[in-house]
Length: 253
Image 1: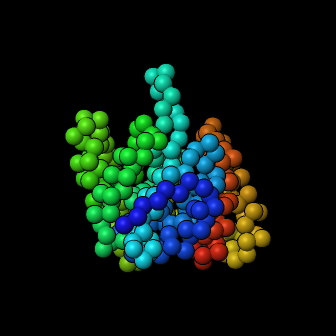
Image 2: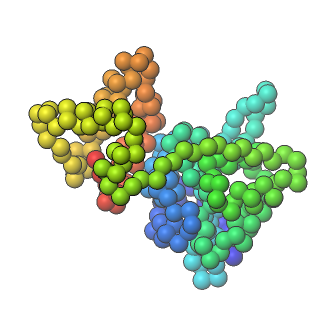
Image 3: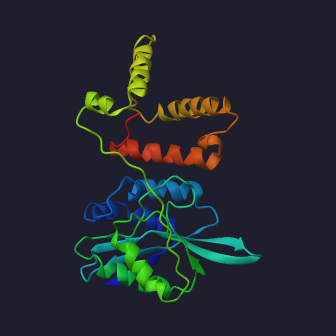
């Protein structure tokens, strides 16, 4: 298995068809690891950061694994250091990040990625956030670097709810007073003039997103807060991402 390191946007763009094909063969198949999500993230937040995407290919040059990483400079205790992180991490947009590996190559290829990362020599500390607890990567990373005494593992709770088959079944799960409030709000919406539209054309996208950003900002200003779309990078991320998702038929807006 050959492992190469991609450091340019042009190379990252060329990976698109192989990336998503591999993701479908991987147990880490989520929207947050799709090429569309991470490409959009990099276009918006990349800045002075350095791409460090590892790509593993077999003897037939078939892509069997991707470690989507980047390196950034940061300061701590008066020192300037280089930190290795997953693409998508650092802006509070992404969840469930991980190595993308063909399920038939896991966990051996992940071990290969960790060994390659250890010998890169271009980073001082690694901060690999958002890995799901059920991923084999968690234990492997802990075992790989744990003996050094410098590996720290932190668990973060992720509340979730299993949705029932129907809306009415869901309403029955709610507390009585909250259920009444939801039904009342829905009745109020139904009485408003106008109609629901669905976006189909990318020419509509800038206007619709602009309205979304403005409405969201207005709502949070009532609480004397700015809301998540206050920064230009965040708005740019959702503009690029929405366009990519629309082209794939993944956007419902």
